[in-house]
Image 1 (cartoon, rainbow over the protein chains, first blue to last red):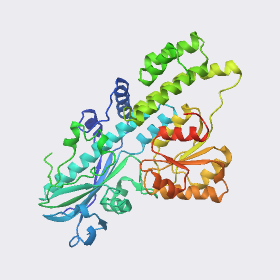
Image 2 (cartoon, chains in turn green, yellow; image 1 turned 30 degrees about the vertical axis):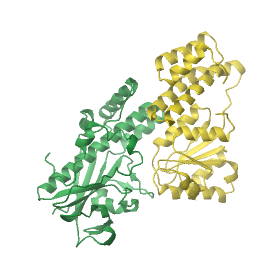
Image 3 (tube, each protein chain N blue to C red; image 1 turned 180 degrees about the vertical axis):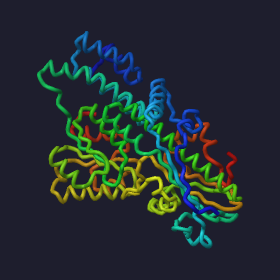
Image 4 (cartoon, one colour; image 1 turned 60 degrees about the horizontal axis):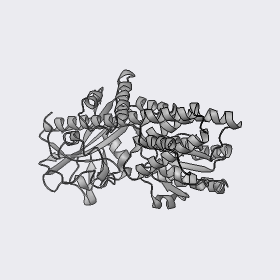
Length: 244
Length: 220
């Protein structure tokens, strides 16, 4: 199994967002649709996007321990949800992705200029871009693992049920986040702010997961993202091996 | 705010319904041609914002609508406020002073920025001291600005420790009794309020405005 840090730079996730490949911010009014269009134009014309990501598969050392502790090459995580009911867990894929700092700086500048609705639209677009980047990274991970006859199952972020927030430093270390200049603050927040981390189980014959990190989200009932047609295609089913 | 005539009711309805072009045109006409008292127009705007806030709380409107309505009020205010100055020789009094910042260790600022904007357009003097604010900076800014309300923003659960530490430092500095403290952020609830020893919590900008209005004795 591969175990070096893989780094991705310059992925054109703006195109993914513009082409509707990921769930979009719901814009119910013409004014909001126009603001989103302006925000996308700002990102492209002012070259605000400095997307980069890194990931690494940390091999599991021995068997999963009690309470879901996973001893990994380079660190340890307590992630009981990643322990499969069947099949064999061979490692954990940890990834970190960021849009860079420029887009946040522009959002702040728009707020300072009292262009609040445009700032909000740009923040929404940034979230879409981060979603798209996260998807691209997960696709890359799945594709790479598929070449080794391995699949992925589960998707967690530090702070989700099943993965404590204080695991974040271990996740970033395992992913090699220093390679893309992403760090944590004292409250475990990633800097630059428009960044995300991903933890996935890796193994053979892993079963389809029966849970989602969204299951216990208090916003689930009114979440517009999960109602978006692109949502279903944006999330790889558990245990899948990417074909794209 | 008393009975509304047809024109006033139309302005409130257009603002509340996000009919921006018509609402701004009517407000300008009322202010610049009909010479309606600018304070009356601003009161109508705030009445419309109350409707918007209610629709937001009921789930009919979302954050973008809340902000768009705020920007409409802001636009009208830019026309109305100079007229108030001309009329009575002084700028309209602020309802109170609010100091706001995101506690140390936390870089989230969208929510704080929206609360700042909404407080501002609702008549408060707001000083936003940014993100990742050290405890001592809060204390220094409080001594200089003398706020009626201090707002602490934080999104991540570990930011609650920063909030608790910051509020405890207000107490140690002998400042705590001088102002109210509200906390806000994505995961805030009564448990967090009690843990941090804040006076109140709010889960969105509408609640933050409501808290400040209540503390300043402004009728809802």
